[in-house]
Image 1: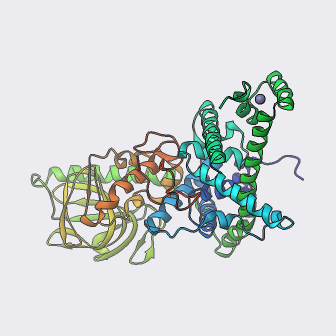
Image 2: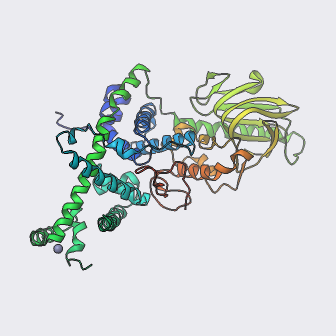
Image 3: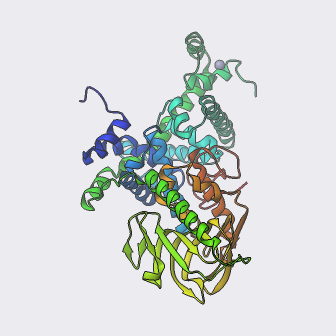
Length: 191
Length: 310
Ligand SMILES: [Zn+2]
């Protein structure tokens, strides 16, 4: 629709100039990123939702403090991360853990609507095993890997968000893939 | 297991990191090599499955409209950019007060090891969500304890205490405060204290005498330590001056008994907050969050609070 898609900085400026509704565009742009960032670190989706919401509301409130030299996504993740630490602290160690995989893959998903039950089972089992393998990755590999696969971000953008050199991002994603590949082979040998 | 010699190109192929020529060659190769073909297929189908799974969850848990609704219904507006200004004022004020009190202290009796007998206590709110007697204060708003004693505080405050010498310390959390036999007494306190500058000071916290020393951070509960940073700072400034004295390298961390178990984790958290996204305390890594892989009981989620695991 727009001939020219506004940059994050332009959107921020617009909101600060009084176009408050424009903030929705920033939310649309980054909600998925914040969601998937939190998804790998929280125990239930309700909590993920809440922190996503809090993150954006807090970002909105403090928008004038956003340093336009920084990446908006990086700033959002800093906020999300602080809120995450906060919520963990409040919850203490005894957070009830739910089976997120089942929650993520609900039976009524549109994708599975027309599938055979056996296909659904196979698909979920596969998904579960992928998630378990990813979960076993060290955090420093997991985060860029997920940004790459789930958010389909270019290496350069991941590098900027994580504030690490481009080559480091590439190395980590390759390392993650290498580990996952070995795990997949072992997993297939066992099953 | 003997692998196809072209096997090491698979990941590069999947990540679109092969040169055009290599790519063409590899595409030719997988037409004839089922082993490589299968693996490429597997990787890309696993990627899509992961993406789809997360996408399914995301589509059911979007909150854009909720966010905008909250902003509209609570009439939230962006706050003025007061963190830079606020911190500049904070330092100017702290410096000005210190100078005044330092000069004044020349005319006062010589120092004792720990001083007390607080004669003047000026308190400044450091964040816009701080309250005095339940009422909101503007960031930077300053008041004299004498006018509100006993005061009930909640939030983040800078204290400038004149006794025989001057001390400036920061407190985050909630507490009551009054003077008791010349000493500052904090009661019903759940807070973190940090001496910023000036002389060591004796205070009473929840009935116990405490020495507040330079580079000391202490909390009366395990929970308070990341409140050390006012909101605005943890959001934008990972390089604000104050954080320098609150990193994990702080010389002394005194915690009260009940805080012992959590203090090291909190400390790592604190350090990770002050250093931001790109550096993790203790681990030396530059990942976004803790190094420790999840416990296994919950696929996809990290073990809560396990932030300094090695
Ligand atoms: Zn081959």
